Length: 320
Image 1 (tube, helix red, strand yellow):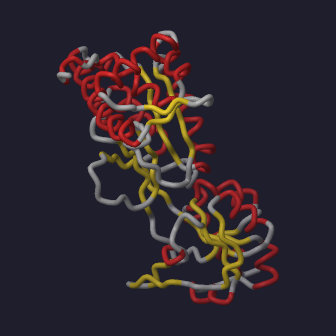
Image 2 (spheres, helix red, strand yellow; image 1 turned 180 degrees about the vertical axis):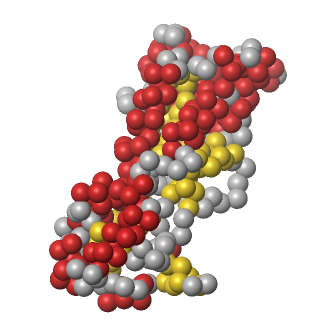
């Protein structure tokens, strides 16, 4: 069978089934019936001579060869869509689906309101959001965009820096009253520490002391893959924690947590919008990334209490 005989609408039908995980949802997204969609996918499988999907009562999952075909086909379709948008002056046609992923705590606190506002501005954009603290495979998972915090590995993905992410060393007033307030990073070596499970322990509690970086290794009291769980544990007095300010700011403002060691800042990292190469050129992705950059940067709204005023508050608390 000649490759040119493959109908691109059949390919699109297959891609939408993989992205949504079900024929019914894919049919709703494309505006066609489930039966028509199923026939298109079956015709594509017949023309290719391979089973692309495993059909179950719960939906449909790609076979190994189907996953490989999906990754290539979805990129090709995105490139075609981008080309069409360019020809049609896509700046004025921000429409279509966006599938994105982001960290859980940041997604709930700060991404959600930004996406609500974006949805109001662009009612023809369909947002499909997955919150996950682990780094997912963008291409394999069919994602258009990921919000990622920290150092980015070298890859073919396109990235745009949205803002800076700062973290603070924190403990509850009750814990400090019982265990004492550390004045220098080395003082933490005798304290109970709370660690974030999705980051190597060697990357946590690292302080800039003069011209060098000093690593602290106290007693590990708790390890969890949720920043909110660690914040709750710190507020309850279980130990000292390092948290990004977008998680901790409300607890600091309320006095449930106090900032420690303000003269020894933790390394600052970047927050990036990361996209597969083909997706980065679509109008809807450009519009969303521009919106997120304006919403979160250049100085994020969750950071004001960590300015000089916060440092002074930390020093003042140490004298009482």
